[in-house]
Image 1 (tube, one colour):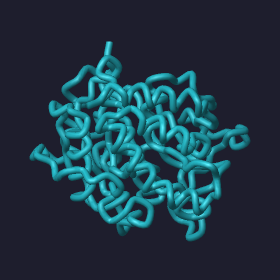
Image 2 (cartoon, one colour; image 1 turned 180 degrees about the vertical axis):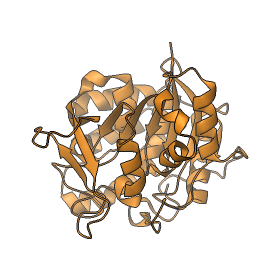
Image 3 (cartoon, rainbow, N blue to C red; image 1 turned 60 degrees about the vertical axis):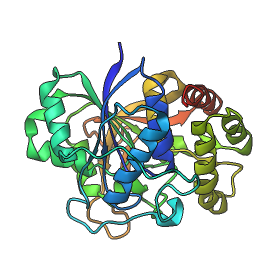
Image 4 (tube, rainbow, N blue to C red; image 1 turned 90 degrees about the horizontal axis):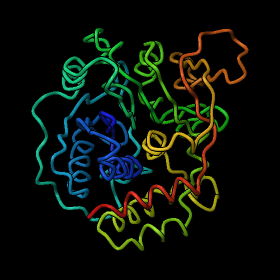
Length: 313
């Protein structure tokens, strides 16, 4: 039976690949909706990008909502230096014909969780956690109804990617991440520690390009654009691929290894704000609140991604 999910996202090239991977898997996922949040670029542009990606997938049955346009307590930090001015530079995707839903994304999350049986809807979060935290604050009754949150965010052994200590999604809205991590919901964290192992090497990108479909060509162009920043930064053979690891974990959790630990977010330090402090060795005695993934099988991940993308137009 297909798993009911809401995708919360700030597309971003890697977000786009994750969305395509999910929409290519209708037997595995019943995507109830996609909610945009401010992050990689502004909310309006992220929402437009989400519509573009849905159209690219051919799944015009998927509703897209716009959520929060800024973090809960802070000024918005964006990442055009990585993703380009549109947030989705690389392919020349047409302006979407699909329209955003009128309902606010936070209200959609609340309504969906309240109307479905408790414990049957998973949140797949690919960006800052503003929408999810605001939904929890606005309607606390949704929190125990969430089946699971699988989130791309954080880093510990690899450090950060927007500051030395912080990963971008958490850094943009650490207060929201703090709310979510204190919520008691079952959480799986897919951090930089994993995604830095899942590298889009030239050979892997060429296999995607060789699919010969629109989606494969667009993904090749997206990742060829966005990876230039990380290739220059890390000097590695390929760039990390972050958000699709969330979808891959839900499809094949056996590709990843980690442990159930305590994770807290720093919200006040000037040097380390947004840091996810992962008690991987259990030295604090704090309550374990998240399954923290530390490694992944890159070859099997790319085989899965390529196979799913091959199903699209």
